[in-house]
Image (cartoon, rainbow, N blue to C red; front, side, top):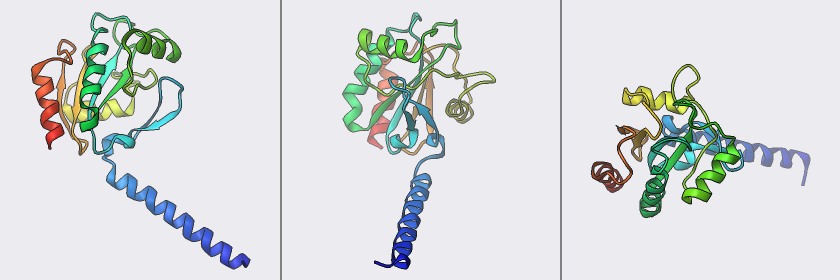
Length: 186
């Protein structure tokens, strides 16, 4: 094979890969076009992997009166995952300094105490000047900022924020479950 042939093949391959990347960004809703490190191993994760899913986004903390909601969130994830629900956890130390641990400590606590298997990301801010860019978009789209730990945003399959829920709304709440089921059916 000649050098010219190899060059042409390589160029075609690069153009194909670039086209696939552009197609992915076009089909991935803008709100999901962010990457965060996974909590367990700090491997970068692109949120576009959740495009087409209904997402329940929750800011979490290990030492909060609402921490027991991890159990209910994991139950929701287990029950509805096959229908397209993903729960996305974002540990934050923004409220009452109730998430002081390292990523490893948080991951160990979540898994060992509550059996959390839904995707969780490295600790970040969910409000204020240091708000992570995903939460900045959730806040802008919903018109509401998290008021405390375990504040929830429900995002439909097209990346539209369809509801937000206060910390006192448990994962078992009939209204929340009905909204998830409705979003999954659409």
